[in-house]
Every structure is written in structure tokens, then in C-alpha cells.
Image: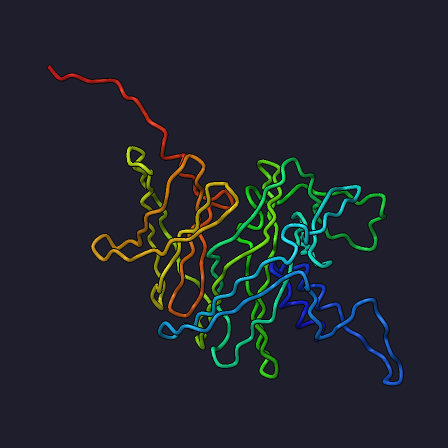
Length: 326
């Protein structure tokens, strides 16, 4: 039970986690009892998080459940912690530790649905956030028992841009005897380029279930946009090219202007151009990322390696010399 929960409650499962699960083996006589600091119970581990689930919607072989969650005390529910090497936030004591990445507040919820199949993907539709400037994050580093404590050193962050690029993920486990699906959400992101810590107090997401044995998400081969700055209010036309052996079901362009709110617009397939298209509001601060879903409910994300796509890049102009032919 402990191993299964370790796996399903981890958003970024790495080789270090795999090694930890291989090593955790207890041998002993049945008359002995092991007492540890951890407690496994059915109590709600995150009383500061309110979760609302709507009815399921069927779209072919994919079943979608919408989940909205928010913090009861707004951003005050995220507790700051300061250590010698840096700062981090947690939610009801929950924090995600990933090798060579900043620690982030994390919560998880059991979203198993016996009638809908196994969970295959998650879509982030909306999210409300606030940014904290000039944060020195606590970056974790695995060590072994032969390294003296005085030699421990905090490593640099392993990634650029915002980490994690998307603040929600799902884990699915089916052993034959046990089937568990969990939503795992990191309520924080850190931007290595700007030193900003982003904290979330609410999120609106879709959970995608199916009976498919296909677990590979669609391939996103093109993301591009054009902006009409002369129009008021300005609009950006986004085009996406994606493919999948099971077919592409739908997609979202998820965007923010930096004002504390992510929003999403549904992509529509244009058969003539063989592209998925959508129009979103455009400002000089707008950034966006793409989420595409296949017919098995798998989700792939194009987020420009955590930097997201910035509409401001489309504002640059190039002036070329005038050539006259005589």
C-alpha cells in the first residue's frame, strides 16, 4: 500500500523514486510490529483544499469529468518555509520534492472512477495565481549515506523557464488487484529566468478517462500565431498541427496576460488548412501553451520548454533596404 501510494502521489516520477521503491523491503517475524513516523489513513490529508466535481461527459470512447478546486483560505493556506539554503511553500504539510528542482506545494486526490475506465490525461482550463518576486527557492538534491552532511550542496535548478511547466498531472496504477487514479497538482511554479515564485489558489481542470490500451499522447509538430495589432482589441490567431494514430480529438490554447489568471480557448479543426485554429485576446504580455487530446484521452503539451509562447515576439518588425530595378 505504501509503495502504491508513493507512486500515485508523485507528479514527476524519476529514477531516484524508482530506486527508492526497489529498496523499500521489510523482512521480519510476524510477532514484531514496526512503528514509523508515517501514518496511512483514509482521512482527508488536505483540509485546506475544496474540490467540486461535475457530472461526466462522454465524447466517443473518452469520458470527461470536470474538477474545480480552491483553497479555503485563499493564498494564506500556502505556508512559507525558510531554510538555510532557500525557501519553499507547502499546503497542509504537503510538498513535492523532485531531484534538482525547486520544492513546490503539492496536493493529491483520489479520482478513481470504476465506470469511466482508467485516467489517461488532464487538461488545465483555468487557474488563478499570484507571483512573488525575488525568491531564493530550495532546490533538492539526492545524496547517499557516504556523503558527509557538511559536504551537501544545493544544486542549480535543472530546467529553464517555469517549472513545472504545467501545474497538474495524473498518475494511474493498475496491478490487476488494485486500480487507483490520482490527480496530483503542484500549486506552485518557479521561473529560473526571472526568480519569480508563482502560487495558485484555484484551478479548473478536466480529467480524461478511457478503456484504451494506448498511453501515447498526440505529436504536436507546429505551433504558430499571427497578431492583428491594428484591431481593437487586438487578437491573435493561433494555428497548431498535431497527429496521432488514434486520431486527434480536440485541443486547448491556454493563455494569460500576466494578470493572475489562466484561461483557455477551444481549438477547432480547419480541414482546408489541416490545422487546429483558435483566436485569443492579444496583449504585449500574453503568453500561451497548447494542450492536445487524442481519441484515447491522452494529453500532450507544447509549452516551449517552460518558457511558453509569447505574442510579443510577433511585434518585432524588420526594415529592409529598398531595391529599384532600372
